[in-house]
Image (cartoon, rainbow, N blue to C red; front, side, top):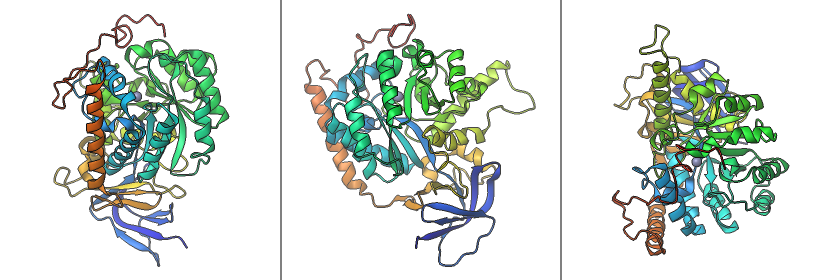
Length: 474
Ligand SMILES: [Zn+2]
């Protein structure tokens, strides 16, 4: 007999229709499934969990994170996009051992979970061998939480290495089922980073293996080579394609995404910080695409969904206000807090192909949910729960996290995670990576952890990265 949990006395935002955007509801969970959501549930033989002073809502879904980079977190806080390409990718990536990538993924997944991200798509482009791929996958499997392993072959500037054998191997071994907490997708290099012929071969393989595809499209100058348009022309877009960023693609390319039923992932913080272009939220909405949200790289930006929602909301409001020439009229602001909370939950689930299983709190879905403290002095008194989440929310509010009906965090503490031990391993890994980077021929020996290291970017021209003189070539 499965264990039943009755969550009582909470204020609940189900995000299922407009029922329960902040009313008192009880939730009954049987095993991993939500079996009742009602104002007052009485049941025997259940574990009653008191959610007084809590907002109970679906867990967040981050649809794009390069989790292997956890070990070099924060290094790129003051870097341009070209410096990030040089510093994070050209300097560090090839120095990662399988053990480093394992710890990066494990610690990065735990970080996300701690702040309420119950599902995370790891866009895994730190992989340089089958052993790295296995280690990256194992990091996600060993962390509590639901994850999508977005496998990407050795990633970089135009390369045409086929991915066939390794992706097929993963699909037939670790990821032979679609039902587990960790599933497989293809992190497609796509037209921004490889030829259209290689892109086509990769997409055909993903379709043969029944995998979703997630692809960077519209990232600063790299995105001006018609990545979406060229995939569209070859019939490579469908409802199982997520296009990440979308900043510099054309309006006609956004329309192509809409026509094919593609989903989108907007990473507003890094896009504004590194000059990808303004977040595409409003352009996507105009063509009927409700985006999901993502963190992208914790080398440069924060890793939690609250500040990601803040940034998405305020960037689009700024653009909308500019469009109307100042303060908007009495209709209020077009993009609502509820919208961005949906982007961070159900739209993320949709982008991961999980919308029938998670993303809202309703009967028949799996119980992936979080409790946020409403009596915290930073938000008390709460007069608009979804406004609190989108505007004032922060990781310190995340009291409880449940994934598939199982508590993974309670009372602010992760369950079954030996953080002191993992921190120690993480620091050893980070220090060894730094030592190897300093020893590397050509690497800057001044590489320091005090913000002074500015990677030289001579090989990343304005044409290639910023696109200021973009020619439209691959
Ligand atoms: Zn990315």
